[in-house]
Length: 269
Image (tube, rainbow, N blue to C red; front, side, top):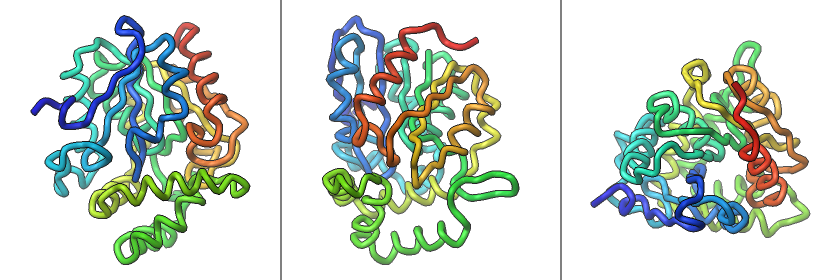
């Protein structure tokens, strides 16, 4: 079975449009992009897929050993882009997939023309002089809750991640996404996500990049977005007036405008 079949690939938009590949985050699937796909597909060939074990991905895609680190997910995306053979693409990564996108570009710069990093975080744990947003105790508690009470974790964390308590439908949509995903898959992906430290990998990337940061984000604070921008050569930073970790849900128009404005101009040197 080809990688495109394994990862439930769907493509929309003009065949001759610039390829725009959308990579979803933890506990989600390609449906997370439904509010922005049509706008991107006017002029771009938009490619959506599901990470290992998520959404409509074939059950065989997930391997607990291989996907114990983000390198396993990076392998998947590299294989998928090779299989699609679209030439260099614009790779859009949300949340942990922003880090995966960075690792893909570092390993295979021939596959990626530009990166769009939405709410990126190369390390979620606070460190000396670095604010990741979480203490070690908070990450331990998060992972422990995932192990013992997955449904409870989904109900509590989804509204926090979505933000916008005055728009409870956003948290409900994210909760439904978490519940669609196999808890074993989410637990492994969460460990790979929250225990990783990819700050050193930023220096390996030479691909032009856009960092999109929400002004208020409980998962990846503004300081993290600025850190990525400051340590990523050839990057542009855009702070959008949005709340929550998922602007494709809470502020789709602002996210689309930021991305299309960036793609309309020349990449930073």
